[in-house]
Length: 123
Image 1 (cartoon, one colour):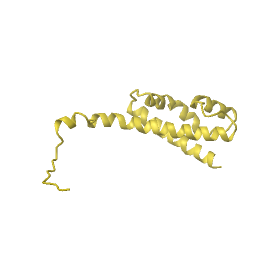
Image 2 (image 1 turned 180 degrees about the vertical axis):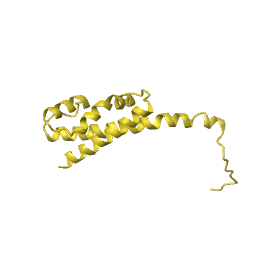
Image 3 (image 1 turned 90 degrees about the vertical axis):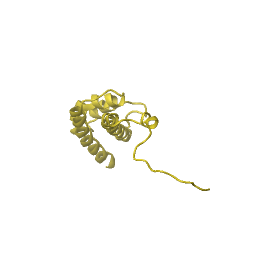
Image 4 (image 1 turned 135 degrees about the vertical axis):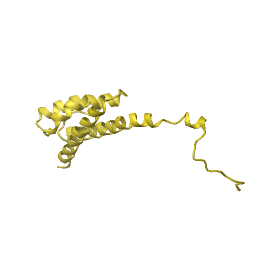
């Protein structure tokens, strides 16, 4: 196979630019993706913790798992702050825009809770 020549261009053609997300799109969506990932990781750890205590099957949501684990006295103290920000994580999962300060608060509380859950699961 041969190549007659090529040209590197610092600018994409307009027809391709129209198909790509803008920097504004990425700026808005990146925090949502981080929140979605965090929520999924928390749900997975909750599911593992609940299963280790004989609570629920695979179809239980975060709310019922939190309630059942609280009743069992298994949740770490960070669960309280996490519950306060759960709505933000759920909004992100459903594609609802989240205020930047609320997203930051949810990441802090959710990350702390996730770390605590991982320690509990590892025991």
